Image 1 (tube, helix red, strand yellow):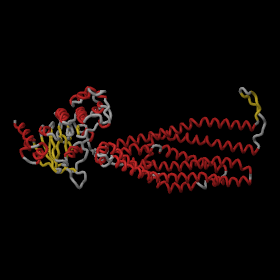
Image 2 (tube, rainbow, N blue to C red; image 1 turned 180 degrees about the vertical axis):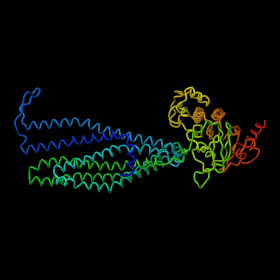
Image 3 (tube, rainbow, N blue to C red; image 1 turned 90 degrees about the vertical axis):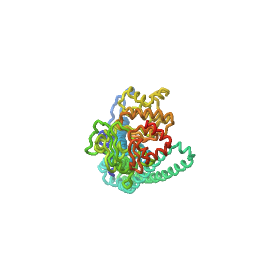
Image 4 (cartoon, rainbow, N blue to C red; image 1 turned 120 degrees about the horizontal axis):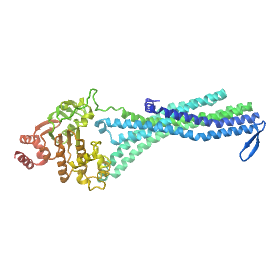
Length: 606
């Protein structure tokens, strides 16, 4: 078995009692099944040897009364009674075997899925940005669903069948070693089939799972962008693209099916061929000595329980290879190390005042190319810094370094003098609030989305945060108020409404450091005015980094830095930078117009 199998078993270890219980009841069920061929053999033996004759016994039966039963009939009735008891007991035994195995299997997958989800959240944004969202979902859902049953059909079934095989082999040799040797002549061919087909089946199953991942990612992406598909009338081309993907999946599935059917067909042939050898040799022995017939009947009954486990091992082997291919992909994600981790000496960040300092900071997504180079500035607690620059200058990258979504390449970022790499990520991020241009809300109610900022907040605190963010202005018009379901990503709300909920979430979080990344760029003028009022309230008393497209927002900031090609080319108050006539003034004139800027300068001078 590959290392993946043993690694999976470590997840099953807490449920070893359930596993042993399932194996015990499975073997007990098998032992009950052996009673039928054993009874038939005894009946044949007694009939041939004349042991069914004997002194009659008088038996008192209800209703019928007293009857005389021969010794042989009495023995036959006794066997039938025992077989009936075994048949009745088989139902609860079968239930317990199946239930205990299923419980152990589902519990193991539950633990593995929980660990995978926890690990996925620990992985850096860089890891997720390189992959489609559907790809990660496929590992968490589809792959683990495919792995379901590996414990039942793998560990328990294989261990049980191997135990049954060993028991039957011992029993057959105890009955007649020569006939036992003949009955075992086909078993080596099972091993040969497993040896050659299993590795190929594993590879084919992995290819199928990879195709499912790609298909899941493509579907998730295209359904998420369905509005774009429809607006450009691209339905036909998307259908054709999906059909090509389905065809690739179909080819790989058929290859896997061919390998699986080959293995099971060989096992079925060997299962059918084995009894022929026993009948041939056993028939020869019976011709020489008719008294050998009861042993042949025993053998023929027992070898069904020899070849049936061998056949099940072939089936289980094919299934296990496919399921292990899915588990391989799960462990591949679990083995991915987060790029952003607490250092061994990290300590919780003390109570934050809000001093933020960039000291010669450099960063690049790839080592060869720096996106930011030599960034230096300092913001005092409660001050606001506006970050301006053309598209691609590195503005969003800069603010993403503060909560350590990415780690800097050089220099240092400090909060109240503490290097952010030397404090725990949790303590750092719980002091930072973010309001982004692309508002992210979760499927659920408005109340749940606001409370996401601080789940322990009271209803009064939640409503106060909503009031400060002007959420209360539209909630009263909704059918269920704060308990209104807003759909995935807040699809039932307008852009301004979603943004206000995002701001309310930040109010409730009450961060000491606030990041506003183009928070009003996609809103209409009325919504933007409302959001601006909420943001001014939110910024009061907090250290704030602002990426904004409104000149009024920039003017309200204490400090402005202008970034060009990843470097700070100007920094200072708005009016000072306007007066210099450098890059900052040029950017403002391009966006707002010269007259509009002069109006703000005049207002500032008054």
